[in-house]
Length: 222
Ligand SMILES: C[S@@+](CC[C@H](N)C(=O)[O-])C[C@H]1O[C@@H](n2cnc3c(N)ncnc32)[C@H](O)[C@@H]1O
Image (cartoon, rainbow, N blue to C red):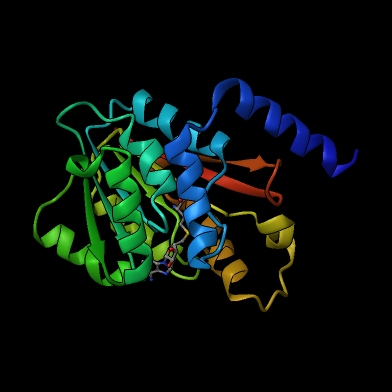
């Protein structure tokens, strides 16, 4: 089967159930305008995040990796009137662009932008008692995914949904001799997930308009 059919079906699903409005389209365009990478989630995965946020009745969301705010918009749109999303980003230029896009989306009152290394902001969130979050989306740098997940657990409650993107990396996770730090990071993460007794988790393999990858979905045990 050719990869073309996966891209076409992904497009078909997005056209049917995850059509982008102008705000989302402009957010994707803004990445090109600024020369930033096109590494946002796809429309279909944005919709998946929205479905998960609704499923978990999320009122408080934490996101690691803002970029231009594309996934932030999908998630924030699932929040109730008094809902809030805190989004962490290490690159000030990314965060500034996201602020503009979120403003255009009319969601500024729902989004709290934090700039800095996630590994340094997460303990602050704990100290400031910002949790528990109802949904946590991990989509920042891959090597510390295990540590991000451990912090996510501390900022969670029973029933919290934790979603981690890009954990299959075109099947490179199968290569035990890999020297790729991103692959090694998600291999370590996936192995931790296997033995973690605090959550019930699985990984869904994803194919479509972007490269073959996978999303880990975990729910904190009651
Ligand atoms: C894949 S992109 C996020 C895409 C975004 N979630 C979306 O789908 O629209 C990853 C982002 O994580 C940021 N990042 C990388 N390392 C980070 C770190 N140590 N702490 C916080 N953010 C980081 C990158 O600058 C980049 O903007």
